[in-house]
Length: 227
Image (cartoon, rainbow, N blue to C red; front, side, top):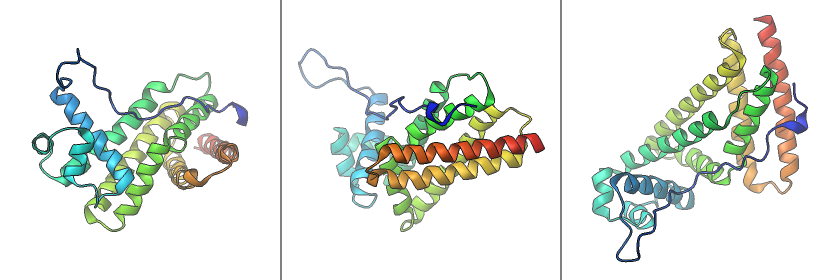
């Protein structure tokens, strides 16, 4: 198993707004339907982080995406459908990044340490993701649509965490060991992401995370041995 100090810390992953290629300077850049849809989704997340759900009007989102309201409504008939698509897009990008950036490891312990480091980069150290998740959770307490969407987002995360963990620990890992590990990791990711915007000592925050991961890996190995 790797030492605490060898966890991945600097992959620097963040979600960025897709750029529109510059043209020859005559007229506005050509935007394909796929580009426009993605710009709308990115603008929705940006507005949600900055203004919350209630104040993120379709007009504001269209202006932020630099598209007409007619084009926005062509892609998304209602605000609920727009936010549902934007939330799913966030989850898809996060886990797609995790899947592509996690390299094969020499041992299960190394693989778990690398996965934990990547999750820290994606879910705690990425301030855009942190702001989105915190705002999402807070808004879900006051809006039934967002509450349902948040529960679905959480369940998707759990399934993806479980798949990631099983791909490292192996198919023989007992289901209850996987489930417990997923729940514990979910708690620490959520708790530490809420602290992240206010943490003045980021090295200590990361050290606390690494200490927890060492305990979790030890517990997981005990479960694998007894299972």
